[in-house]
Length: 193
Image 1: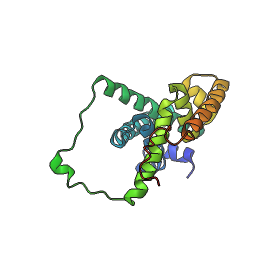
Image 2: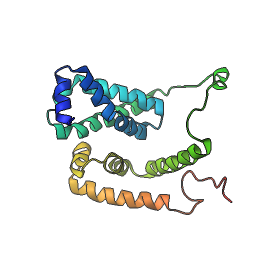
Image 3: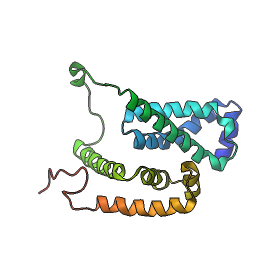
Image 4: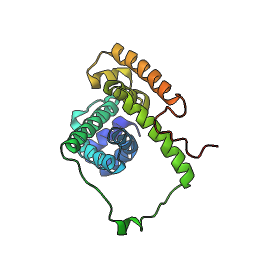
């Protein structure tokens, strides 16, 4: 179903259309929130907040082609708000030792998961070392796939600036990730022969 039709049905109160809309975009919203927040639970909570906001303000987005940038702008703002709140009053989440021993580790092979986690952490650490504007441009353009026009509008900068910053940021990111094995973020040298 086309996004325009889906949005029209959601505005008309169709619950199945709303569920389809959420399913269609939940991974992108969660992924973007995770890039900003770095914590899966926080990102999940943020994504829920985002969809509540979207539901309440569906009438604010009339053009189907403008929906994704609008959704990602709401996600970005919600994640930044959440970061600010946590800086103001950090939470102390912990799992009691008695409960920690009963937590199962479902999913893929632990060695494969560790390798993926290390790669993801290395990329995240490299992203964190970029300047904030360059980092946001990479996240919005390269990871979320927005157009330069959408990125520029969202960040309040000229399109040319978004393009040049994107190019510089990608080169800097590649340089950090391709650096000497002991020099790159997240590399410990463990497990190599």
